[in-house]
Image (cartoon, each protein chain N blue to C red):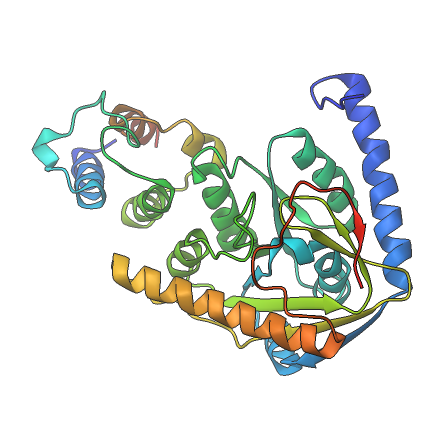
Length: 249
Length: 77
């Protein structure tokens, strides 16, 4: 059955699905042990500053990132904002995250991205919320950093916090980027890079250089987390994007 | 909208698009005719807010597809 957010039954079903998903992530994540293996000082710096930051991580680490950001930032008093598209998936994300107190920005990231960028900029500047911006989202290619994050950072004057996640045991879900879902009682490892400030005035060459630098930083942090988790580095595009779920390590 | 704000807005549009201010027409689309992609659109909205000391809502921004849309929005400020 297709859940349509524009019908009453669809909205009800999406509400139930959001509750189930929120409970599932909540229950599953309580069995995980989470350890910051590098850059804990950068998280402390974020909590100590009154201004928001831009939170970035690779798309396929979102299931690990969600409870981490809720526990370490939202529950510590920071407002976190997340962009959700106007689609059914975006509605489901909204129903899942909003009850946790996450500020959800609705807007299309694929239809030119203007609405998404402006909504995120306003959440940052007007509400003081720290937005999650997934640099290889919404549809990849995986691990390829898009320049939109840099423009948001330079125009808002907010620094970027690169976050990387890995775990020792997980399911790999057959989305375009092989979404990593830690199994029960998995160990989750987190690595953070220093806050990144992007100069306001950049020409096209500067933007590309900054994009490559941010991509490299996030990949290096990912490698640190993956080494701690004892899993192979997965920084090349994962194969078999259309395959069903499989059992990874 | 004051003439001053109109001049400022056209100046911002010209600077971001690279199109001469005198060549800007109300019917020109920001994306198609002026080549304003999403990062440049963000720059445009930020420059309008900061340069003209106004606030642009998500809904207002979503309605700005042409040069005329931008100028009409400013008339309501």
